[in-house]
Image (cartoon, rainbow, N blue to C red):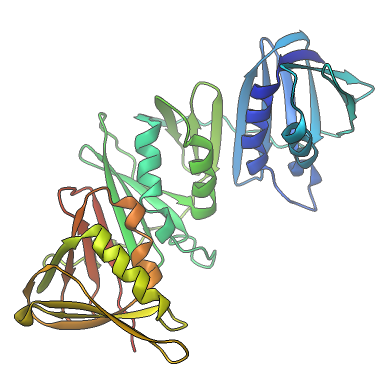
Length: 365
């Protein structure tokens, strides 16, 4: 194995694949990056068995070959190498020689016979702009449960509906739904991507321009772009029938500016208790919407919010964090809050954007 390539391109590729490596004591090869030099490209592969990646780096290859190198060593090395444009790699006595104008380095290789294959997924294909797909995942993934006890709600649920791709996540305390318009008709029943994998998918695909090719199989999904091939495990389970818990209409409605609401929530959180509890007092008959927070160790606060109110009076307690988590998903300046009486969920919708809906369950005192 012998090749030459750009230091910047190899550095950028290693930054991405390093995120996917595994920390598995029984299979230490998962902590490595597999280098495959063939044709006109260097392929860098990494996997933690739940998610796998292959990145292609353009290279001038003099001799083809395969080698596995510890990912943490590669990351540390290429984070500090600078001042040179190109780097030469050569396999010498089963170790990797790294040469720049300024440095000559020998990296110990590790046996790669046990390195898992990155599966080539075949099945239904969706072509979608990468930015649209990532927008859908980003809009909801924070609502998924981080626990593995119930894998169905520890996932992002994605399913087709007419000309939309729908993204949903819930941890049973709140639920986020985002609809993204697509050009093709799809027939798959819906898939569950584990929360931990969605975090990595966002990091890998967030900077991709143009379309990505998504291929669906029974237990796997893959994402392909010009130089990235990413695979993820799919959860075998059924997502809750969440539409049953979404109220069809509200008995109380509040319309207000997003920034005013967010600022008031931040002030209230300073005075919230250890459960992040804040109280909404909504009195349309008196034209009053106030947010109240009390902490026996700090003090208390009441913030009055300018808003348009209609319907019945209602008082509810919420976890501050569950509400503010959704604000990065709202692109409009105004939003509407819908309530259906005590002990019923609050629905938050951006005004002028019907593609996003957020539901938050109230807290018991």
